[in-house]
Image (cartoon, rainbow, N blue to C red):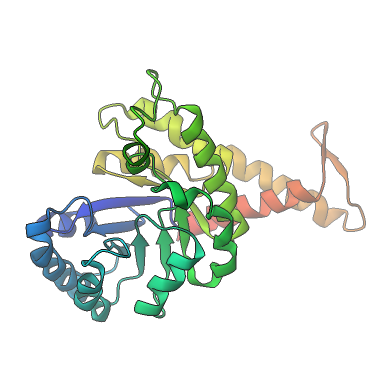
Length: 280
């Protein structure tokens, strides 16, 4: 499944859901949590369920439900499960136990935990590999945790993360890959700064993230481009694969004056897989 861009859409805005389908997002995250006021949640559940049943699925349709332990999650699931969401996004997840608890309530529906929103969650990041079969992806965020621990900020003046949150980003990256899941970069909140978003998304891909969440339609083209192989990358990957196919008995080769070996071949094949997915 191609998951370069995942766009949040408020669950109480059915007009935006329909418009979002015409955009270039690979997935929509229909939000029942933070984007919806408590009084509006019943109507939002109905709107999402109606949309899931009627929408042409040109993008994957995910739902961010409310957290485990709230009195809202069961109501969310009762409204939407019959409408067949493609996945559930779980806020305030605290490791494999949270995934198993949600899977017991929503059997067969893949889960994307938001893995860094509580202090206890940080110490469970390594546990997601144990529930890899229940996961579609893993993502993180730096909005809820600072409030939970009394921090005054998660970013420096230049927009970069302070050390504790940069550490969480890295831990989520490795936890997701250890679980064999898509690893989704968090949002870029500066809506008017598309150049900053471009740099941020390109860095995310170069670090090993496989996609990124978006909070505004204007961010989608930038994110999709950042997480799609360039023509130069495709051509280099083709050359690496061709070199090993021409020399099947060799484990190490030279290409354009550089040594290449098995890790380069795996990366080349991955790039070609992404390029094929982008062309579909």
